[in-house]
Amino acid sequence: MAHRRCHFLALLLAVAFVAAPTPADAQTVDAPRCGAGVHESEAIGTVGFPEDQIFCPLIADPKEARSFVSFLHGTFRSLDDPSGEGTSIASVGVGDSFGLLRVGGPNRGEGLQIDVMGSIFAQFDLGASSNDLINADYVLGFPLTFRRRGFSFRAKLYHQSSHLGDEYLLRSDEIVRENLSFESIEFLVSQEISALRLYVGAEKIFRREPDELPDSLFHTGIELRSGRARKAQLVAGVDVKTTELHDWSPAVSGRAGLEFGRPGPEEHPGRLIMLLFEWYQGPSPYGQFFQDDISYIGAGIHIGL
Image 1: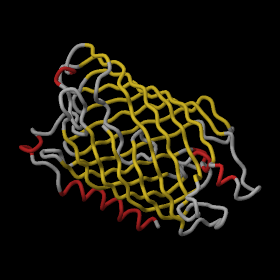
Image 2 (image 1 turned 90 degrees about the horizontal axis):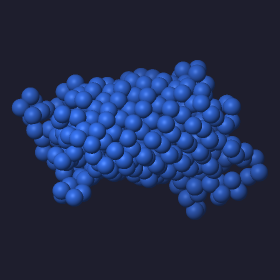
Image 3 (image 1 turned 180 degrees about the vertical axis):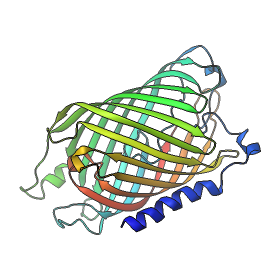
Image 4 (image 1 turned 180 degrees about the horizontal axis):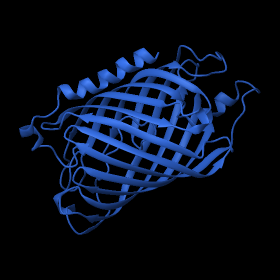
């Protein structure tokens, strides 16, 4: 498994490097390069309800706030098959970030901004006759973000609660539901170097239920974007999280594919659509199953700013 993981990570890096922009191409890329468009009216001064984000959303983080639907096949623990081998699920997310206030920087897409974000992450058992809802995670947070040239920062205070689906609970009296919820504060710093982006950070969970939840988390990752000299670019990312609860065993998420986007009209922000191949190995990101190890491969459609 470790041998296959190394090959996959190498493939992710190679996909985006093949289409990395030349210096001439790089001049045509929007700033931030991950955005679908930045309004010139928001370049300087204080702006209420800004229409775009200045901290680029993470490509490969399974819990990043965006809307998506992914079809995944792999090893998930289930009642019918305790090993979870050969299980297919649909992973669905509905999420967005809404800008409240920005103090603009000297260039377009820069400055200090506060947002409110919300998202729901749900998983459905495609092997069940009614595609049972297995688990749903509800997240509400307030990110404070900063950007200056290729450097960006995000501090996010957020709440998460997780719930098992009714149909899944009815499968057996042996299923135990956790009353799972927590509040956490996340810090991430990010640096872009041409087509490459590196980020690193940590979280501190200051209220948690049950007590078995980890009290801290280390988070890092790498991304590559070929550059939107036209209306599409190749993207790839590897996201890694570790906690003491799992003896620092990494949860590794990889995604690679195509991103399509264009600036919206003057009164509306642009949107992005990403078609991504996905891969995951490690402790589960799904709330009620936080103590399980899972692995999967799949593909999905992701939509966001």
